[in-house]
Image 1 (cartoon, one colour):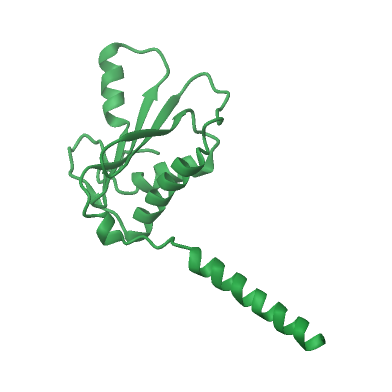
Image 2: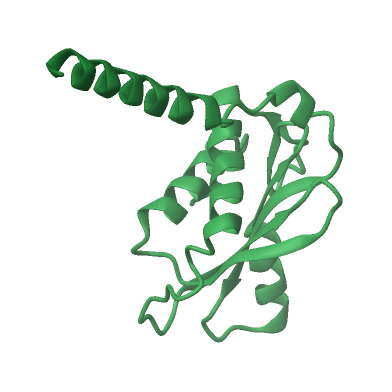
Amino acid sequence: MKNTVKLISLIMTAALLFGIAGCRNDKVDIRELQKNKGVMLEIRGNPQEAMPLEDYQAVCFRMVQTVYYDGTAYNADSLNTPGIKMTDEDYLKIYNFCIDNIKNNKFSNYSEDVCDGDTYTFTYYDVNGNPTVIYDGYCYDNKELQDIKEIISNYSLDGCYEA
């Protein structure tokens, strides 16, 4: 009887572990994903303080960060530089951030009690170009949102872009 219980426990444990390992399909084929065209994530900043229209338009131009499916990150800058190729690690962080937040709608009830500064709109585009807003608002206190902005900022050539 004791051996039977041990055997059943061992079989159940093995089945559980096999089931967990077998069901995980987290592997993303980066090269396949990068064959897609177009924007994956766009972060657009919107200043909330009063200013002349010309200043507002100039500031808004500088407050756009874009990650393309081909793995290129672009930070709008005064040099009009083309995008810079991201590392696979950073690319996957951005992609997983987008997919996880689309699935979980994590930021649907998130907001910060701030009255000035800049708001940001994080928009994910699927491989067909369909947009989904992940978050729209202030993000000073949210580490995950700040980390995503910072990753993209690291690919700025002019050194002036601030996350």
